[in-house]
Length: 365
Ligand code: F6R
Image 1 (cartoon, rainbow, N blue to C red):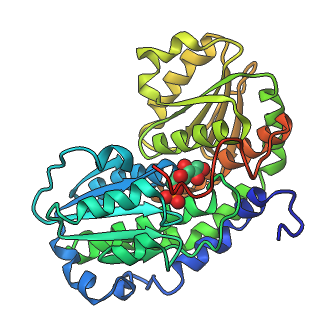
Image 2: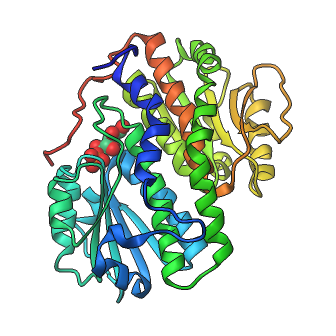
Image 3: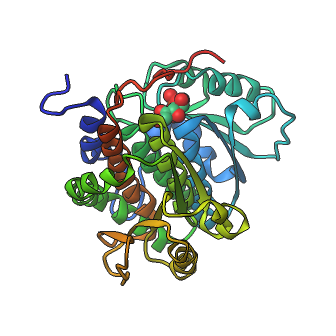
């Protein structure tokens, strides 16, 4: 039931504060995370994990890409992320004590499930399914499970399933730091940031009207570029995927530093460039990348932290979000990109909840 909402997608975007709250229920103490939900075997073996491989498809793959930044920076162990349809058909080198994480909203995606089955004989320390459906094939066949509690997702474009996957992955990152006796301050920072997240997402949702106005600019556009750096690069990828999927506008994401290595040639007044530019050490660099876009007449739409000064010139528009800790920033900046693709789809009059050619659960290969 869509209730008061025009589409399931919009309803699911608005359900995110609650979905995040449900996913975190009973998992956080004041200065430690509660790992019992992983089961007794996982709890005792977390400290042995020295490498992580993450395998998934589509939006779930993007969640994995964000987790790589967290795991390598905060836990200090290597993390590799790959799409399931590639992983399952190649020769994979698995170092000793590697955890395989498969991520899937549905737990029935054919390639992800096949990847898990393939991994069974590859000598992993264990396999973990991160999933939104407790009774799914993926959860049944993995050694360990970590469930998101987003509730059923009806809209084909994944929204609340993605943000809750990120929440679970930041929680797991924190559990790994804790198991290895790592940085206590980082654990507390992550916990407090996660606790603040539902309220921050509420605030981001208030940008709805502003973003709906911006969406008009896309009505007659055929292409768009999305830029980000660091943990926000996969968020730019997710923003581009969402726009393609439901508005049929061709969109591509680039790590902002790659712009001058090719895609800058595409930029003119017909190319909206959406950038995800929160505060942080990478912002200054991103700013100079954005100057290059502006100088070429590109229409710039920047999502940035309210604490950072951004000049509004010509066609450039900046939409600000509240300041948050770096660790949850990629989750927060997902919200305006979801709203943007939703409103562009409305302007274009496409079938938001059931985009052409796509299925909610891809059970064929
Ligand atoms: C995009 C989207 C898809 C899915 C992909 C994997 O909005 O929903 O890209 O993320 O088909 O699906 P799951 O997560 O069910 O394995």
